[in-house]
Amino acid sequence: SWEFAELTLEPGVTTLTGRNGQGTTNLVEAVEYLATLGSHRVASEAPLIRFGAPRAIVRARVQAGADDPRSLALEVELHAGRPNKASLNRGPLRRVRDILGALRVVLFSPEDLALVKGDPSDRRRFIDDLLTQRWPRLAGVRSDYERVLRQRSMLLKSLSGRRGSASADAAATLEVWDDQLAALGGEIVAARLQTLAEMAPHVAEAYLAIAPSNNDAVVSYRSSSLGLDPAPGETEEHPIRQASPEEIATHLKQRMLERRHEEIARGVTLVGPHRDDLLLSLGQLPAKGYASHGESWSFALSLRLGAYALLRSDGVEPVLILDDVFAELDEIRRERLAERIAGAEQVIITAAVPSDVPASLAGRRWLIDAGTVRLDDDE
Image 1 (spheres, helix red, strand yellow):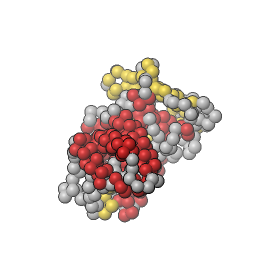
Image 2 (cartoon, one colour):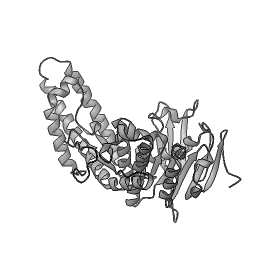
Image 3 (cartoon, helix red, strand yellow):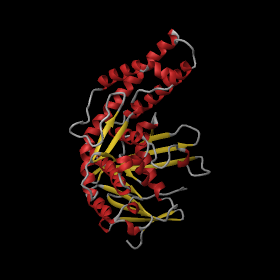
Image 4 (cartoon, helix red, strand yellow):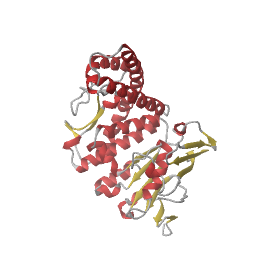
């Protein structure tokens, strides 16, 4: 929504306040895009370009830390209907995704309620975006996996309409796609399992700190392809098992062979990480369908705080963004969240109503109104 906006986001807490529809979310969305090449608000990139404009440009100078003078100049240029461009320190990058890793961000927004109440695809995107922040090279693995998945599914669909057995050429081609899908899928699942095993304690700790509840928040990995189907609430009895990419690839390949006839009959790929899910439990019950609205909010927030704590344990100080979050939380959860993030190096908060933000998070305030952004004169 911005024709032009420029502001300095300093260490500590920064609050962006403005009435709904003034563009506060667009500003933090720009920061998010530099870190993830995606938006929490929309799935495609077309809505990220101001209506009527041929392109959108996001530029930022990113400092390694409050006490570290080193900085990087990042730029991403989004085009409607043409490939995007990116540069690092004014040098053009061969691939836009090569900019990943220069800035790390954890963003929580009202849309995150879908992590608990939504479809498996919402939870897969959450864990896969976290993988890419931890290991930027996995962006390429994810892209290659999606490409192979499309090609393999197209072949299965073409075979599903044929009578009799598939030709030798088609069978050989399918074998090639099987090998590639299993190898790439093995990398993704192994990284998911490692990340979940390391993040799960942080999620449980964050939930206990935020929610007025005696229930434990448990995250498990569900995969019919790998025979992982824990019951809700299982922890020590069913820990998140880790395995090497090679071990997982071998298992995936075997499952593809076992389900070959079913896949051809249905014309769809039924095996792989694109079919997996995260099982979220509160106590002995699945969060989806059983958790209250407040409990669901607390669980979604705990997932983001768990991701934030995990990145910090990796030696990274990510920017924590809370986009219009406090309006959705009751007073107890607001104060507990404020206590939880008090030690963060940089926090950016958006709010339509300034009084929604706890006084303990007082910081630098920018006012957003009618296409302008300025510092609060009453600060």
